[in-house]
Amino acid sequence: MSDSRTHRRVGATAGAVTALCRAQSADPLHVLLEVIGGAVGGRTPDPIDVSNIPRHRGIAHGVVPVTVAGVGFGRTLGDAQQRMRAEAARRAELRRVATTALERLWHALIELVCRLGAGALAGFLPGYGSHLALDAFTPAGLPLSA
Image 1 (cartoon, rainbow, N blue to C red):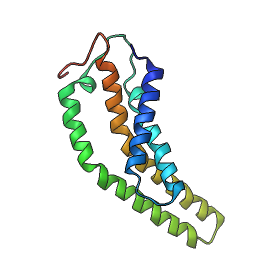
Image 2 (cartoon, helix red, strand yellow):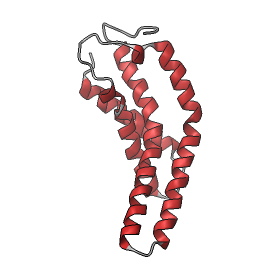
Image 3 (tube, rainbow, N blue to C red):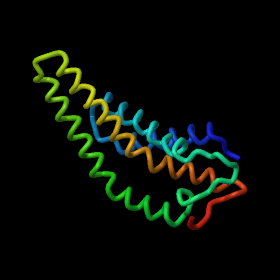
Image 4 (cartoon, rainbow, N blue to C red):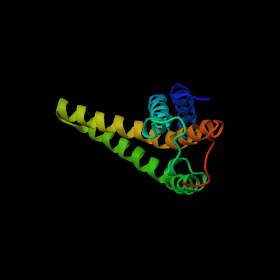
């Protein structure tokens, strides 16, 4: 039976690998930031769905509702990532032309958050999928719906 530690490790790995595969930048630092964001995004489902009882299962574990939500999320993922990357590029340019150190710092922080966010978006779905896959092989299994 998989525990929380296993869920976090598998989710982080699935998220990081997916973010790496979806990264579109030629800049290694940008790719690294998206991979780190993917690892964080892949770990996110486990703390959201805390197991406070051994056989917990609800709508978040239902095969049908999760599949429908996953398909919808997957369809918008590319556009959402592109918006995050575009905002990161815009902030990088604003940082280059900023006149004060505080302005440069602000734009650098927002750029960092956007690059991590693009990866986190890519990592969330495989992290959630790995969470469900691990839960599917427990005695409680997964219900079809809630």
